[in-house]
Picture 1 (cartoon, rainbow, N blue to C red):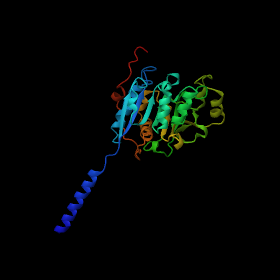
Picture 2: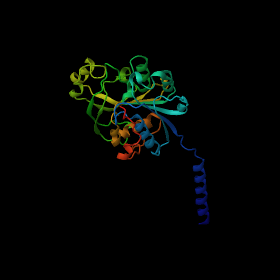
Picture 3: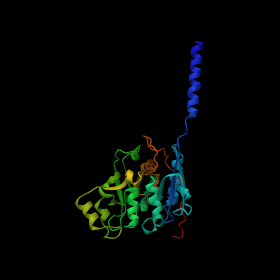
Picture 4: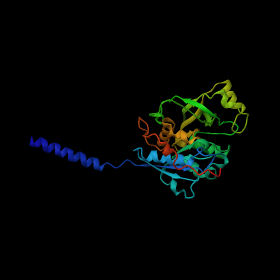
Length: 300
């Protein structure tokens, strides 16, 4: 009996020492770039949205350290040092925060850093900007090809780490679609897909509103469109991951659990952290939570 007890004590001490010897799980740094104030109150709340993401990522129990940069691209790029992922939630087009920093964005993608773009940040002008975004996240909003209507999109979840714990859902937002993807959509996995209604193309043709190509795709060929996608870069391009999410116009939509959590899952995924089977833990934000950190848009 004494020998048995001593053996159990020895095993317990040995296991405890081995557990203490295990190095802690390395934490992944995520840099969230929030764009400048834009649109009216409650819309394009980049700062409030990024701070909400930061809070939920850092309280998720996952090995993530999220930091937020406000007012667009950081003046001190040392904030990117050691980053596993960079997420941009901002206005796009010519005013995209990365437009004046394309070499840096290319270098980060080539180094295998995860890149994610939310809502208007998926748009860059065709040419070097668009090609850079294609290489980083696999697709982008191309003017006179893609469109940006408000409509009720209904999504059924495919099998992917990003959809862990996410149920099928429907929500109204400014869902961009008919995106320009890399040739053959190689490395692209659709996450949120639906067939837009004819009413979403009721506006006249324009840079963002309509064009013959999108009308043929949706109204004639009835091709389903991807509003969120995951991207795995080729090893020769540096590897790493990217994602695009075209919703996010209305700040209050982040209160919807599946809408918010699918983006949080995507951030975790591009950072190279395994997404739990139940998805990221993210309690529903209260109305008071949603009112925090809103931009002062009284002048607008």
